[in-house]
Length: 390
Image (cartoon, rainbow, N blue to C red; front, side, top):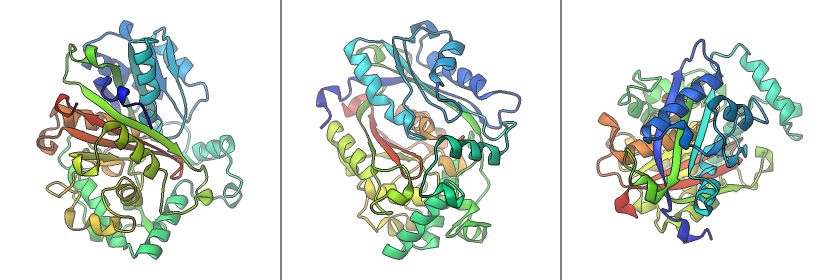
């Protein structure tokens, strides 16, 4: 069990993003630096105040070093663990330990990618990643990675629990309805269940509309100790719980294609925060594919295993539904530049601050953020709360 003494000891004081959609003419490092400066300014700090850094990227194994160089900082805490898209949620707890020990005073968690406008083709990027991260039981068969893996999990869930393609489509439609309320979202056109089902089949049972966007974007958050956060520019979002779990790398090594390590990370995050699923006001999940949302709603305790399809029906997770999920439009309709985890943190903080305009969840005091990496490989859960939730 994670020490309860860390509950609420640190808070996110600033958030920022840049290059959402198409960052034409900019490198991933350039938009990362833009997002970082915006987050630091949002916190009411300057880059001179930043003495901790947490970052990761698929493009370089030593990514933290050029980031530090470009930001011009001299950190005493450096965290660059790479767990895929969940990395930035997973970076919270190490950063909290560093802050609480006095190793540093302000940690910048940041990411940037120009995967959409990069001069490299998607095929070249995919081939490079497979060479760096070979999966011996899968790579020889040249799957559409990561799409084929998620399609496999979706097919198993449908077979085992009777989940339907229409229920998967409900997830995409709900995300789009939230995106229509978000002026920053990339995809805001109306979307129906019929349009999701009739879209181009890319890996059975998933169509193109079951899949996340492929675009550019950078995001950053600033984490400080709670006593300092209270005296800064904006309303703090306190980190009440955080935990990370990894059970496998390859999807072929999962014990059960319908149960992810979110069932472990979520349980530990709830225990640290002293809350449960029924207490959560807003949920931000890593929805790289529609099946993700259903799996994570089950594994994080919002419904029983196998009931995720029924849970999302009839607009239950859309605006006006019983549980607000992915209120920015998610990776399916808002933004997904390779690794999405930083953006769910940003959206959760904005919701807790009450800054989300038409998509604002009234009275939001507790937010659950859940990041996913690899092919249902790494899972990291965080509970954020307002001062009222302490």
